[in-house]
Image 1 (tube, rainbow, N blue to C red):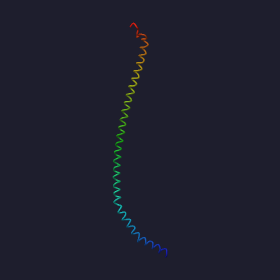
Image 2 (cartoon, helix red, strand yellow):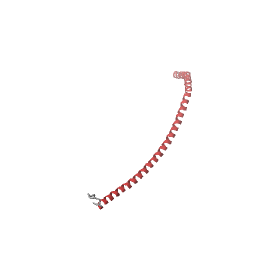
Image 3 (cartoon, rainbow, N blue to C red):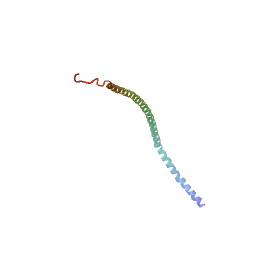
Image 4 (cartoon, rainbow, N blue to C red):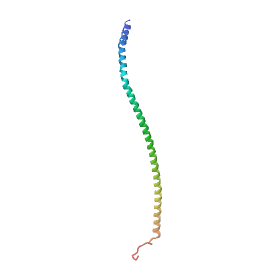
Length: 117
């Protein structure tokens, strides 16, 4: 008896006050709907902009990689040409040094300047 009556009274109190609490909560939620919708639209706009930025950055990255590969190929070609020319120049210098040494040995004294000349 007594416990049931106490529970019943609590339930009835909740029914009387709970309805107004729920109504107030529903009204507050209805007031928030436009602002939440605006936030969703703004977020969707930001997402679209981020996707466009990502697409542009990806294209720029691809272009930069292609430019780097092209520049690397040019540098490698120039380095190979330089190495070939340097090797040829080194060979020519070595040949000249041998020729000068041979001429100096073969003409020892042949080109001496004398006082009578």
